[in-house]
Structures are given as structure tokens and as C-alpha cells.
Amino acid sequence: MNSPLLTDKSFLINYLRSNGIFTKKSYGQNFVIDVKLISTLLNCANVSEDDVVLEIGPGIGSLTERLLDAGATVVCVEIDSRFVSLLKHHFQDNPRFYLVEGDFLKKTVSDKVFDLLAGFKKKPKTVSNLPYYITSPIIAKLLQSCIKFERITLTIQKEVAQRIIAFESVKQYSAITVFVKYYADAFIEAVFAPASFYPSPKVDSAVISLVPYAEPLYAAADREFFHQFVKLCFTERRKMLKNSICRVVNSMQVNTTAEEIDKILNELGIDGNVRPETLTIERFIRIADRLIAKYAGINGKFGYLKK
Image (cartoon, rainbow, N blue to C red; front, side, top):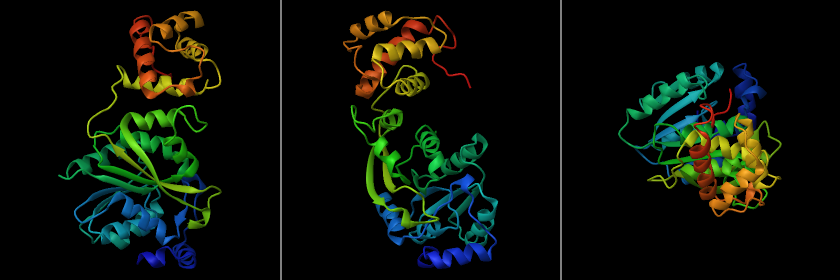
């Protein structure tokens, strides 16, 4: 196999058919047929010899092959057993190729992947074309993992990429903006049209890079509560901040009033009449920390969503 063939639409269609493979919408399978997109991923991730790279969802291996050609050690995670067989057939003789079969979002699988990555001396990178329907949970797992990634370069839905890099008070500013900013700097590297994939998605795509901070920039008193608090606030983004926070706190089985929340906000120097979408990450952290300090002792479950 070679990348120009694997990214040729006609070859790809025949290749899949000859192996009895049809794409599954449930897995969000869209294969890259644009050599420029693959080159962009490698260049933006600055993949070079001796790099260790995690690839999630390699599919038929068009990106995998280019990563191996660049001299990198590649740890692939593939959920679809049909592609697992193809990947083994084409790459198992390469000593720099490792394959983990399963759903990366399942703890048993991700633990196996992270244990494997921890065995290498060099800080790993992630380079992947992600299934769009699970972009957010995969990003969360990568940024919160025990592995400190040097760089995470992904192809994701353009709309999601715009939300990740947004600033407060703009339409795209959302919970994922604040979540990613807690851990890393984010940059949109390039945008690609639906025709870059087969089957073509209905949306534009973007290559985005996340660069985890060398040292933490932010430290909420309770990280899990902070992220959940921000997420809930953005479900109330059109309401005044004091009312939004009041509903969030009450949803966690702690009774409070908008007036009491407004008092807390005034003590923090924050206007309770603004909307949550206007808050910087620093202000979200200050509010979350104050709520934990005030209410955590009232209800042992305060701060944690019911599963």
C-alpha cells in the first residue's frame, strides 16, 4: 500500500469492496481522500523520526502509513474488527507499529493504551482523524489522562474547532472552550471541505492542534466539580448569571436563592446580571471554588452529576 493510492477515491472504494467492507455510520467512518489533509496533519504535528504517536481510529491505515514512513512509532486504537484485520495484515511486520483493538472511550482499552505509551521514554503526540460524534469525549480523555502529550493534532468538525478556540462573549464560546483552555492552548491549523473525505460529511472539517501547558495554568479546588459546573452553566447561557447558578446549585440538591447567589457574586466582584457566556475561565474557577467552599458540607454529593 502507499498513501497516494489509499487517498484515491476510486482505489479506496474498490479496496473496501474487495475486502467486503462497507462504512458504518454508527462509527462515524469518513476516509480521507485528500493527500494535502494528511500532509497537513503530519506537518502541524511536526512528526519526525523517533516520535511516539497515538492514532485513534486509523481505519484502512492511510495516515498510519505516512506516520510510519516518517520514522515514528505508532500506537493505533481501532474499534472496528474489519479494519483491525487489514491493519494487522499490512503493518504487523513493522516493529514500530502497535495495535490495540477496542473502544478508546472504554477504560479498559484506554488504560491499555496509556500503559503502552508510558513504556516509551519520549513524550508522545496524538495525530488522528477523529469520528466527529465522539470528538468531545476523546479530547477530554486525552487532556485528562495520566500521559502528558507533547501535542495533540486532530481533524474534527469545523464548528467544534471554532467553539474550542472561541473567546468569551461570542456565539461559539461554550463549555468545551473553557474545558480545553483549562489544559492547553488551541489553534486551528487549516480547514477542509467535505470533498476531502469519502463518504463526504455534510460539514467542513478543521485540523486543530492542542498544546498542553508545560505547567498547569489553572487549578480549581475541585476539578471535577468545576467542569460539571461550567457545563451546566452553559445549558443556562441565556439567563442572568445569578439565576443560572441558582438553578445549577438547586439541581445538586442544595437549596439556595438567586439573592444568595447574587451576594456571593458581589463578594467576588462579579456582576450577577451578566450571562454565563461572558465569564472568563478565571471567573468560572473563582465561582466554582466559592460554591464548593460554601455548599459541599451541606450535601455530600454536591458537585457531582448523577450518572
